[in-house]
Image 1 (spheres, rainbow, N blue to C red):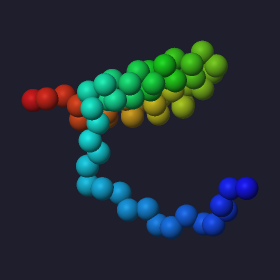
Image 2 (image 1 turned 180 degrees about the vertical axis):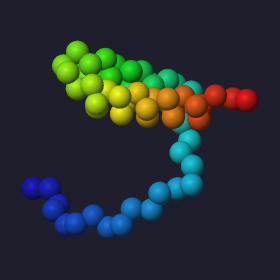
Image 3 (image 1 turned 90 degrees about the vertical axis):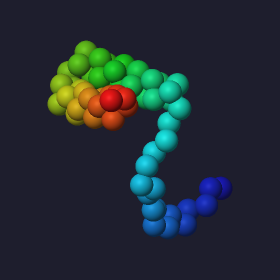
Image 4 (image 1 turned 135 degrees about the vertical axis):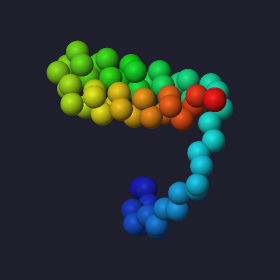
Length: 63
């Protein structure tokens, strides 16, 4: 039987470091999920994923 104790507080780091492959996989997963949501009528949800995709893509671009 799994342990059902409440989780303690979570402390996020200042940065998230992804390999290039992990970043591309994340972008692909967002794009795939967005397409599935559009096909099933979840336009608002697909728009939210698109916004997240745009943010991730913007942060990945090297200037």
